[in-house]
Image 1 (cartoon, rainbow, N blue to C red):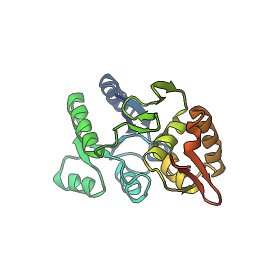
Image 2: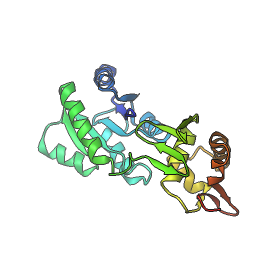
Image 3: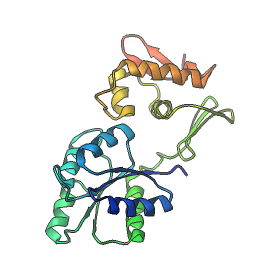
Image 4: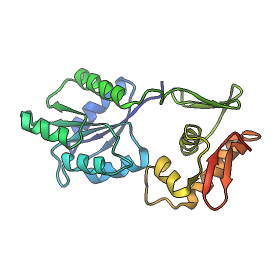
Length: 229
């Protein structure tokens, strides 16, 4: 199964390291940030599957970052577990009201952390999201993170993979470049719309004939994935 990505946000390096070791042993991919600003940049660029967020940090606090992420459309669904030394009931309620999916009080055992993390990820993964999608012999398997044509594996970059996954799960609708940026790149404002054209060309090249024709240019709008000519 494809490893889920977890972003650890804590200003204390020893705590990040302890959590990272536990998660890597449980086969998770780990990213780290020591402040809210760095964390937000990683979230936009890498789109982690879950956020482990320390409540108390210098500058922007974890709870402020949680509120910001829940307000933004592209990150509103990101699962968040708050890590904190605050154990009082009022603090827990405050954390949950800010949008956190769970709350773990320090100190905690690595086993407890991994168990709680798995539970949150199970709740956050919509039914059917990890089901394979197949169109005219082109198959995308989200679990193994593989794309194949008639059983033969295709090689493509991570952005092309995400683009293809979005197209194959949203067929027969035309999307503008801006909409594709929001959906595939996560609303990264530093990416120009013409970047979409570059990745569309790369994706078509990776698919080859005849499957590259599934990605259709819609003049004056953008692109559409369709098996209809």
